[in-house]
Amino acid sequence: MAQDPYLYWYPAGSRTLQKIQLGFVSDLRPVDTQDAEEVLTGNSAPYRSTFGRARIVPIVKERFTSASLRRDLEALVNHLRAGGVVGFCLDDSKALARFGTPPSTADTVIPLDAVEPWSAWGDSPAFVSGDEIRIEQPGRVLRAETVTYTSATAAALTVSAVRNTYDVGPVLMRYRDFYPVLRLPANLANSPDLLTHDRRLNYTLSLPLVEYPADLWAFWEAGVTLGSKTGSPFVGGRYSSDELLSHRVASFGTGYDYSRVEAADNTYRNQRFEQPSTGVIGVGSPGWLP
Image (cartoon, rainbow, N blue to C red; front, side):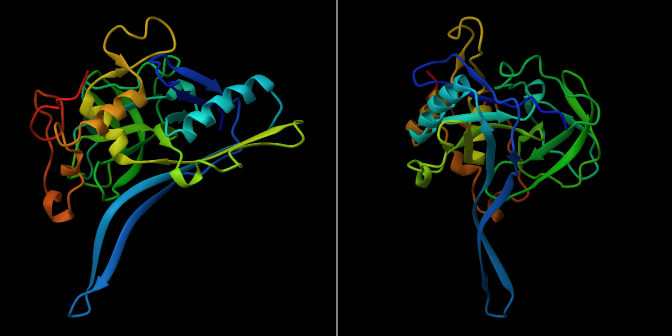
């Protein structure tokens, strides 16, 4: 498979996108994880409590020699150590992600939402027939699958038949190897193994990153487009990933509370969240956008 992998990030205090071209990656093996506990009830029937989920995305690039790339990655690694976020796509021409109406089993047409937070990142990104698209729903329960892309209009994506029924929305649909919001776990902030070298003859990048659903759906909640690499970054309501996420966290309790979407199974199992005029999941005003 051809690669043109890029890392995408915004330096602290900047709304201008920084793109790092990796050339190749040695390893990319994402793993979906589910945090759950299971107990036996009085009649010995198993009962599972689900607390949350995440996706582990290890990105490895081994034995490169470019000093310029090493300097770019040093800055990014320090950004991650400080709690910043980064995006990654295995193919810059496919850095695409859209939100849409939750589909049901056997659906092939999925209506699209107008929100396109990451549209300025890729180099004229576009899907082609046969591309693999990941579909997933928000919330703490893992429900996701991969389908193939057929075609698109401004209003909808046409894909191969969906296997699951998605009872919470909007769903996120993206190129299989596009990860818009990744974090370095706090317990690895002081790891010496993120960017290593062999007597400075060659270098190895090893980023054990994590993707959280609440981070992804915060961008739909906000309804904004992120800043691009070229042009004036302060025009057209464009923001940085870190700026948007910090506003969301700082305003919990006074604006939109994402925990509604991450309620227990019996609260949202047969419920669809619709987008009101305020542009958030559920009801009420976001109250925190600058």
